Image (cartoon, rainbow, N blue to C red; front, side, top):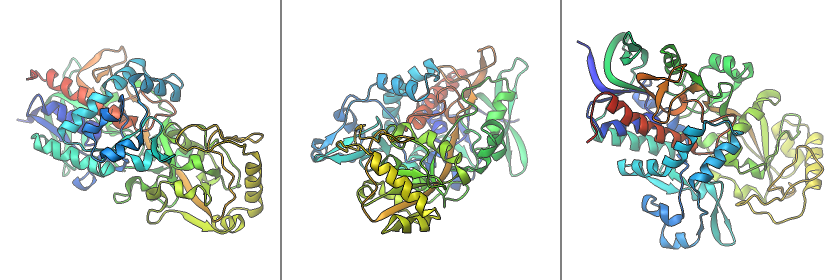
Length: 497
């Protein structure tokens, strides 16, 4: 007789564990199946900075769940409110209005509740003073609607998720890839086929939650759906997200949905390995580019570094770097801007950091044409308009008369020493996936729920198109993972207590 559980969850990242916590609140018979070995637990979650977008009315609204705010710090902190309406507006703006309206509404409405629910489960939070604020006029001013992060980043987030699941009695099996779904004649999902040590076994389930990520780690699927140039992209996170779980859902009749030609991809250190590094995780990110001049191998600028806060441009700028010659670019700073960089990212061991007393010498160290670089910088410096520089707001300190412009935070690059960082494209996750309803039930081609099948996390399509607001991926995993876990337990016939 095959094994049987009320809920089987495929994957072991933030969305999967959110589903496990929710299901375990209803039933004790919950199984998590993870393709990767124990030392690779966490999927892409492990490689994040732990930033999670949530809504709040004020700093006092968040203080009960954060660990790093004293009364003295609170008095010196400027934290504008961020409402569900703000969240929806950001989603609509950065996706060009293409985000699924119902899923977006649920995401924004449930964000705060999901964050607090996870805190009750044992997740630990902090205000991200180091990553999301600048000191202006003696106050730490937060920007870009993103303030909350987990203690110890993605590593801490995964450790806390695993501890909470084990405490709740959730069974977790590593090195156990799911290779198929069990189906009844009417199409209902009744379990999974799992492979362990070369042997296949069937595991019955009252309901199944798919949370196994997208296809960003498969170069062939990237080339097929994103374009041939994407084979050259580096993978920011786990090498195990290769699309099998997504393909299984489609074979079971799930409707493909969302931006199959789009992905989250960022400026990533050119010296980074082909896939994620478990020690340095997100420290290969180079996210202070709004303060930079960014040039390609021709020493030419190719995008508006200051178009918006980095939270609203970073996920799409990786693609712009991939389009440049050699899929490489260079972020340039001087003595004025270098102190404002995210020091963990820009001083991490092995990063592509170069320093020189003159631009000509910096060009040589970056293997750029010195005359071309000096010409580009002189043109930029001349175009910088007067105004007050303020990195905590969109300050309208811009350039005029050059293309592309720099819309905010434009400072002349003119105070030695000069710094250069080589970056390439690092893909985080793919946007195409399966369609779900607001309860995370997987829908078929005629928008009917496939009985017994739920999904959450990166393999859900419809939320993000071309771009996304920073921190909303972890939020979506928590919100829809929670809904999937509860729904799966109820489908299994377990009555919530």
